[in-house]
Image (cartoon, rainbow, N blue to C red; front, side, top):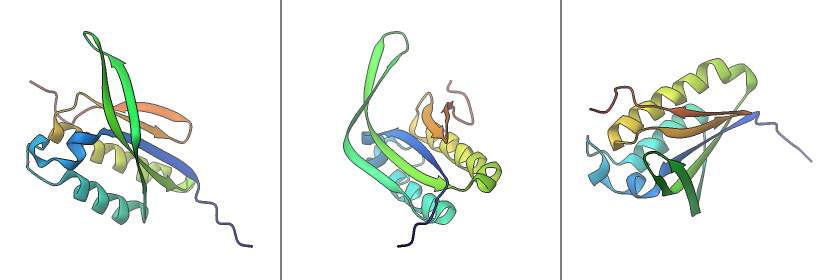
Length: 120
C-alpha cells in the first residue's frame, strides 16, 4: 500500500451562479474555465463540490448564497508562495464578479479575501 501526504488543504467558496454565467463577469470571462486553469497550473489539481452549499452572512440584513466549493492541497513548505498567489487570484476574481469578499480556508486559518480595488 502506498499513501502520499498532500499537506494542508485550502478551500474557497464562490457563488454558483457567478461561476458558470459570464454575465456576472465584468471582463466577460468564463470564470469556471479561469479557475480550472489557475488551479491546475498552480496546484496540479483540485476538487469542486457541486452539491447544495449555502452560506449565510450579515450585511445590512441576513443574506445567503448558494455556493460552489473548491479544494486544493499544498505542502507546508509551499505555504509562503502558493497561499498568497491563491489570495491574489481570488481578489481578482472577487473584483471581476462584483463580490464584496470571498471566503477562504488555508489549513487551520479562515479568512475573507477582498477585491483588489474597492467597490465604488
